[in-house]
Image 1 (tube, rainbow, N blue to C red):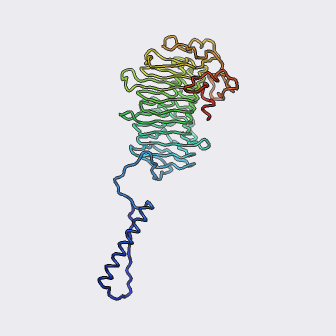
Image 2: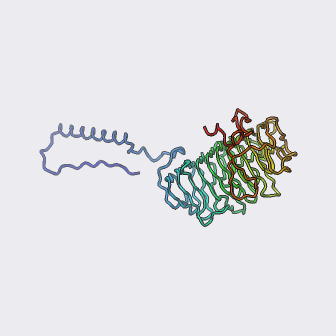
Length: 406
């Protein structure tokens, strides 16, 4: 911090010796001048108030961030600028990192962006933020992704996160976003209008906290194993209007835990479209939605097409506090119809469900081994999925609806 100094130069020319009255008046004038200048600087925000202030996690720190990112960081990654992750980079508790629209964070060798403070990565529809490996390593699991350790808030909007899930020291892959709430379970997580493409394991794994996941795309999540969105250990919030294609295990997974039952995971799951998932690993058949291990959920208005299992509410879930209905199930493989509600689970078909009903997407590729997503899951005019939703959430089913587009 620099101090502004006011230096007064005395006229070195000879002057008559001042009288006591003159000296008194001159002192008064100088004091008034000093007060005037101080008032002006204070109004302009130039005078600092001391060094004992703390960083407000909701206010971006103006610190300049180098093009080469590593160590402890805070401040702003500028719009449309490229940054290179040369080692693990950490936002400390009490600090804030803001990433502006169009910025790129390119990892050079399996490094992580670690958040212990606050992250606001807010792109735009026309200028998404990109996070991924360098051009020579465009394959699943090439970088560690985002690791969140007791953050205050993590907010991702219009971000694309590619090829995350790099191998941990114990040999297992990481989720693209690995998130642990603070001990009070008040950490916040928000994801809107993002794309998570080809992580080696889960799209994200949230241990506790609160927040929402809205209007995202989870594409080809998990190589040998791995879910899409995975909620654990007391997370509370909602996941809605997401498109999920080609997950290995569960596309949406909700559980509290097998031994620690509180805080309880509690998620509203509605208006998601899930296709061609749960088939990559024959030893681990995946569900479109799985509710398990003393978790509770409300599950409505979802479309599940060609998922290995449909809605799997297991008997280990908090079944007394689970509600569901108005979901559409469809498969192009007749033998999979029996698994829309697995027989060994708690869930059963509801009168409001649409069972083996083609939702009539604008374009649908039923190939469950496809390596690229060429589907358009907007509904055709007159689709049977229109007008069949639980109106408490949306009159229509699936992720693209008139209500969402408002």
